[in-house]
Figure 1 (cartoon, rainbow, N blue to C red):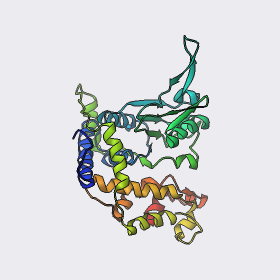
Figure 2: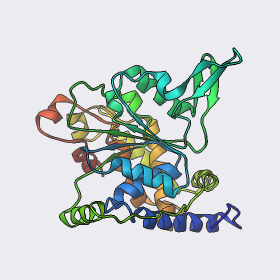
Figure 3: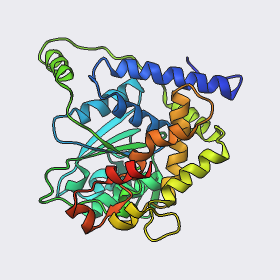
Figure 4: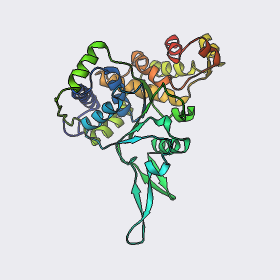
Length: 323
């Protein structure tokens, strides 16, 4: 598949499903297991959203992102977030050239895929600079607006264990991420395969499967996919149920939630469901597609109260209850 010229949207969706399978097979050469994580990251990319990966160190988060970037034939930059990182370190800055003229020196944000490693280790000012770029798809330096390349996709990682000396992302900034994706330890068999592969001299040659132009085409295609009214209503109703002390709130939500998800959650549920349907070879999403991505969209958008924490009720428990 070389271009983006298809006779119909149906043919284009078939091409998207086929591209997804090729991507998965290519990524599986390097990444063992983590099928659900890979699928969710690709869905957020095709939906033009950003993702937050949450997992302990050593679960191949960086390797996963760099592998996806390589298979997608995209420019990739990794930024290690530290407490002394300044906004200009990621956006770039004006420098005085030899001709005595100021020139803009681009920072690592000017890339198709940016891995923001341990985003909660950097102060709010630098976090805000990244999050502005995520929202606006541009950065402003010395009053000049600079557009970021297309597609532009941020994958941030966060370590859930060490919270000392970190700057947790505020809810308004977490809302910028389409998905919050938890990474778990591999199974015993998967770990055997990982160790066997990484302690030998075997090198995998990865092929470029999807171009930047195709990704932009697929992002537009996802928005054109039709959705039935009952599926749309289900998605919006699911989000409305997370808001305590409202008409639709359940008893569990009133008991355990301080704040529910906003309208952006509904938008991402619908976009994510459309893309989930497309990569599964369907031409329109159903309620099962909404359910499949609901926990990734909602888990960082609901805020538990002290009662939930005291009773050990997690965000996942509440979402399961709603579904």
